[in-house]
Every structure is written in structure tokens, then in C-alpha cells.
Image 1 (cartoon, rainbow, N blue to C red):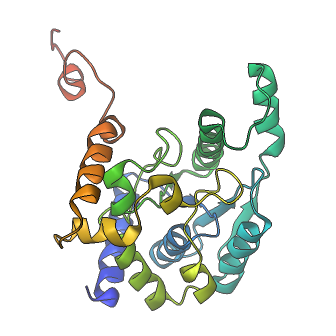
Image 2 (tube, one colour):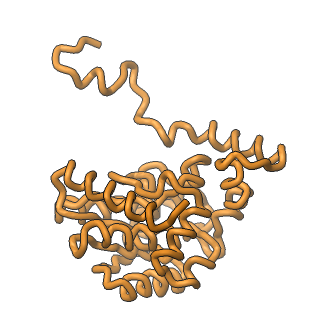
Length: 250
């Protein structure tokens, strides 16, 4: 992959999607990780100042906030910090739940709250919500349904993690962000690879057709099958696109 040509291709694609939607720009979350940092810079290249990065800490690592600010300020990206600890805690209280950092249903509330915030700004500004999931994550379903998976466009969806790193280096993303262990920030010390039980290196080799251990091959296929519902529209008795046609009888 030629990073320069890939950046040019993605930027052009983003511009086409924004124009097609009659939108004015893009809004995106900034977590301080490599994927969201790459998306932020690509969005800026595509839409100039008609962008907004939103940093949404929710019992997150202070380092993540620092890294998100670093990227925004290094590249001159407009951003807002919207702390979500209070709404998150209020929702758990209404649900009668006591906060448990390692409780997965509770942890998934965080990206879903972030999705709500992003769409608030998108509706307010007539922007599209730009997601940061890459091909490696999408393949195994490593994203929260209607959370970080709830977006309008996903410009990194065709890139493996290895390719995202190549693009990040080309764009000049700070090395400390490229090198840090990928994490969704769901709980203290949580990492993507630790939670999945598969490294991105193995995932990328699988996607690129390189040989991997049989046990990992089976695990990845099982992840992909189990998460298939995340990559599909809601199940309906008849296809949604057909039901939307005038005079169509179910």
C-alpha cells in the first residue's frame, strides 16, 4: 500500500459522501487512540475547518484525554471536551446498577452515550458522524452495536490495523499514539488484544491471506460468525429496501 495514494483516495471518498448527503462537514470522537487520530486528520484534509472532534471521557484514563488534546492541538483540529461521567452514573442509578468497571453491559453504555453526543452535534451542525473502526475490528465484531458502530461513514473500514499504522506514520501522528496499546477505554487497563484474545498482527495476517495457527483461524471465524448481526441491518420479515417501495405489499 502506498500511504500517500491511500490518503488521497480516502479524502476524495469522504468529500463525495459529504456532498452526497448535502452535509456541511464531519463530527467524530477523539479517544487519543491511533484510529480516531487518523480519522481526525483525514477529516480535516477532506473538509478543512468544517469538522468537530469530540473528546468524551467517562471514567477514562487521563492519558487518553491528553493524547486526544495532543492530536487536536498539533493539527489545529476544532474540538470539544464533553465529560460523560455524570450522565453515565445517572443512568446506572436509574437502572438500579452499582458501577462495576468490568461489567460488559455497563461498559457498552459508554460508547452508546458517545454515539448520542456525536449525533447531537451532527444534527445541530448538519454534519455526518465519521467512525474510526478498521477492517480488523469489523471482521471480528470488535465494536459496540449502536455505539462506536453507530456512524454515517467509516473511512478506515477497508484498512487493517497494520495499514492504519502506515497511514498514521505518513500523516505525522505522534509516535507515542502510534505505539500505545490499542484500547476501547472500557475499563482501567483494558486493551483490545487482551479482550479479544487475538493480536492485531494475527488478525491482519488472516485478512491478508497469510498463514496463521489453526487455533487462531478457528477463533477468528467463530468471532466473525457470532458478530454477523452487528454488520447487518435490523432483521425484518421482508427486506427493508423492498418495503420502502411505493405500493409494495408485505
